[in-house]
Amino acid sequence: MHVQTLVENTSHLAGLQGEHGLSLYIETGRHKILFDTGASALFAKNAAAMGIDLSSIDLAVLSHGHYDHGGGLATFLELNHTAPVYLQEEALGAHYSKTPAGYSFIGLDSSLKGRLRLIPVHEHLRIDENLKLFSHVHGPHSRPDSNQNLYIRNENTYHPDPFIHEQNLALTEGNCRVLLAGCAHCGILNILREYKRLFGGCPDYVIGGFHLTSPRTGRCAKLSMIKELAKTLKETPTVYYTCHCTGLEVYQILKEQMGEQIQYLSTGMFLQLPHT
View (cartoon, rainbow, N blue to C red):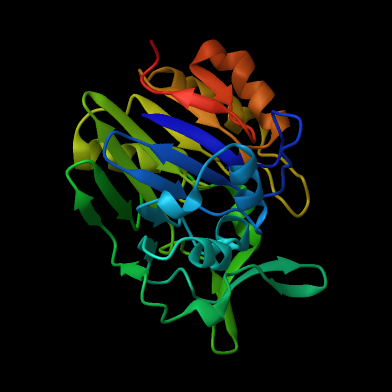
């Protein structure tokens, strides 16, 4: 299989733009998959420049209900007329970020509710023998501190976001096992723990953001927490490709601790998995 980054905060290639968001194109022997759509139509512009035909994609997955992962959804539905889009039931809910000025909406376009190709998922879903979605992740490990300003609204009341709208994609091809996590709001260690429980053992590769940097303030997780995370990840046999909400400063700390076991994934990058 191969994975190409359609959009991420940074750009790897001249002629391709980045934005605060994430969108990945995954091609296997059986599927052409879109994982998230970034914050705007930029993912589609970059895809065209990379020679990727979005109309040929046969299924899409939204990792959660924030604009930086689903802001390009309407564009995708215009360009592709057949692919189902799998998202958790709560993904089109009222999601907010708390700022000094009040609550700022960071959710998806509510006018998309009811579109026939949007497939609401309740917790887990086996799409086929190679693709499985899982959500509602809990566990003993702490969630990112940067979740603290993220809320949902129920009528006129705001509550801390429990992130039941976040889902992860477990993908297998042959003996290669890949875990895709858009932002890991539930905590990457909790997500890995749930993956092991559901599928046995660790994935060979993890791709996604770890939400260790606040997009609003730019504040990073505590150094002690980052180093402890690196130590735990290093104990696994997994290779990590991180990006987006992990933050470049945090990535450099993880890189110092983990070496070649972790890499950064920016706009335009191409991964062939498994590595040869």
